[in-house]
Length: 309
Image (cartoon, rainbow, N blue to C red; front, side):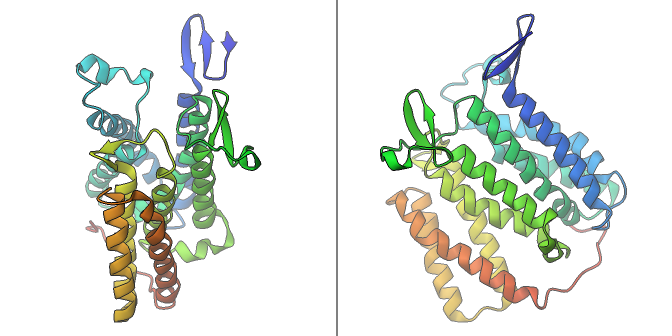
């Protein structure tokens, strides 16, 4: 047996650290979800049941998402199945994993929203650990950092004798913060009501991903638009619209949101200068935070419904 930066070699069979870290992350996420499910009113072992189906589905979804955005490369079914050669995308995993969890929730007659409240913040922990697999594989890094004063970790990471933005670390740290805020710190009381964990994860993660994706050099594209950045911008805008509606926001807030959201989505779509994402992104996120704290005063706890979609 021998060890390298990228894999463990056991008699010629390579076990990649990326896969090891993802596996550990999944185990930790399931363990944390099992600890949270009782407090949030789910039947015992619901998280384990969801994991058994959603984790494999998530891996398939992550692969399909990546393949569909690289059809020019995956011209044979054999290449599609060669997952050990790399090629997974977290959004694909989240989408198919969530759809699978929805089916299981319907079958077990439990609240799907409550399952998302329990699971998604724990998924953030798995994402945080999994990003270090990107570091070991020398991937998911960002634009070149030329200023010597910024050429140090964790601001930058050295790849092939060049310093690049350590975007893998930015996301790893942010995902860990999501986990802490929703699951660990005393402010977790802010995420006890139905839908809060789901909404909190979607808002916080989409904000971070939209910002960091614009710095990466290995993004997946739909035409000239970065796929994950565009999807993140859309999710963030939907979260903000929901919170403003719940707040019964005044017309001036809707006007600020409308103009900012329009600019954010158009720039993320690469219909004009993509850097304009960073003009509207903090405004939309700030509106989310404002609406969250204002509506929290009147947020009432609801009973879980067996037929919750």
